[in-house]
Image (cartoon, rainbow, N blue to C red; front, side):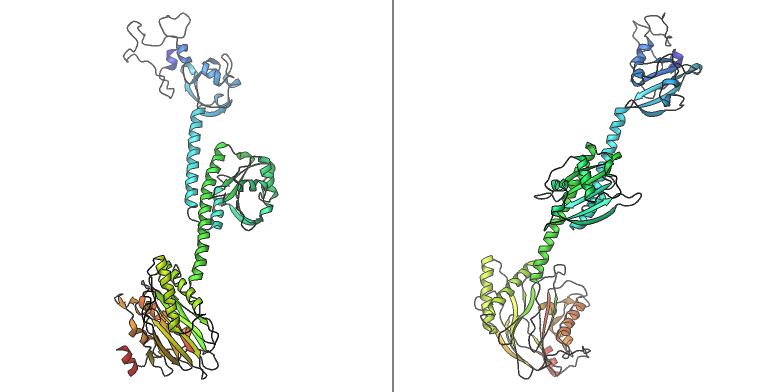
Length: 587
C-alpha cells in the first residue's frame, strides 16, 4: 500500500486526509517529513512513520484487495468486525455478501452488529473497503425514533381521551386507540357494578379501522388475570394470560399458541377503574419499552375513565335533584281543569325560581298555588323546593288560605334566618271547591304577587284585586284575601312576573306588560286551560325573540261544569273585542 493508494481518498468522516506538498509542514523541525508518504516496505527509513501502525488505530476497519479480489491487508478493526476476511484469500469466497462484488455503500447486520461498508477505488484496479460499526449510533437513532413515536402516540391518546364524558364512549375510545400501536387485540374491562362487568374489545383489521364490540360478564365469571388487574396488580404468567383470554372468547382469529399478552390496571380514584388486556402475535413480542408504553397508556386511559365515571355520577345526582325540584303538575280534582306552562330562565338547568302545584283536600276541594322566589338558577330552585315541602306538610293542618300563607311565612323565616339566606317569595295561594251548579268557588290569599285574571263566559277579562306583602320578610305580613266565583266554562289565570316583565319588542328592551297580557287573553275564554297556558307562554316567548328572560310560570284553572269534561276541540282565538271593562282595566 503506497501513498498513491490513499491520496485523494475520502473516508467519509473527515478524520483521514492525504498530505499535500503544497500544505505547510505540520511536523516538528527535529523530524522533517517528506512531501509524500513512503511505501510500506521493510527497508524504510525508521525516521518515517509506519503507515500500517497509523491505519490500525482508525475507528473504521480497512480491507484492501488487489485487482483479482485477493485480500492484501485487513486492519485489526476489520478483522474484529469481519473475522471471515483473511489476507491472501479471495474476498468473494469468505466475506459477507455486501463485500462480494458490491459497487456501492451498504449497511447490514453481521454477528449481531450493524455494519456500514463503503468501497473506494485505488490505483491499478485495486479496491479498499472501509468498514464502520454503527450499531450504537443506529440503536440510539432507533431509540430516539421509537421514543418520538411513543410520545406522539401518547399525545394523540391524551387528545382523543379528553373529549368523551360518558364511560361507555371513553371505554370504546380506549380500546380503539390501543390497536394497532399497543396491541393486535385490546380488551378493557370496567370495574363491576351490581355484580356485572362491562367489557369492550378492539380487534386489528387489515387496512381498516379496528373492529370494536362490547359485552357483559358476571363478576364471578371474569378471568383470574382480569380480577388481578382490577385489584391493582399485573399478572406476568404470559401463557396463562393468553389461555384465559382465549377461553373468554376475546381472541377471534388469533392463534393463541403464538401470542403474547399483558394485563395492566387502569388507575382510578380509590380503586382501579378497570383492567386492560393487550395481546400481540408472536412476531411482536412485548419488550420492556413496550410494557412501559402500555402502562403510560393505561394511566391516561384510567384518568379519562375516572373523569367520565365522575361526570356520569354527578349527572345522575343532578338529574335526580332536578327532577325533585321541577314543578309538579296539579293533582286532578273534580270539576277542575288545570293548565300549566313553565320555562326557566336557564334552559340548560330545567329548574328555576317559579313554582306551582296543588293538593287535594279531604272535603273534595283543592289547595293550589303559584309563586316566584327571589333569584334564579339552582339556589332559587332549592328555595322553591323548601316552599313546596312546607306547603305539603302545612296544608294538612290548615286549609284556610290566609292562615295557611301566614304559617308558611313563619316556616320560611325560621329556615332563612337559620341559614342566613335572606330570601323571599311572592305567592298566590287558594282553595277551589266545586259548586252544585258546576261552577267553582275560589278563596284566594295573596302574598305580594301579581293579580290573577278571570276570563268570563261573556268574553270579558277581569283583574282580581288581590294584594298582600312578600312572604319570608317580616314575622306578621299583611295577607290579602278575596273570593272569586267561576261559572262553568270560566277560567282563572295565574302567572309570574316573567310574563309581564319580559323584555323584547322592536327595540328589545320594552316590557311585555299587563296591557299586552290582557290583550293576549281577550277572546280566549273558550279555550281549554292547557291551551290557554300554552298560548301565554308562546306569546311571551314571541315577544322575547330568543332574548334573556326571567323564569316564566303560568297556571290556569277552569271550571268544567257538572259533567266535568273539557271541550274536545280547541277554539280559534278571535280578534279581541274591546269592551268598556277592558278599557277600564287597561287604564
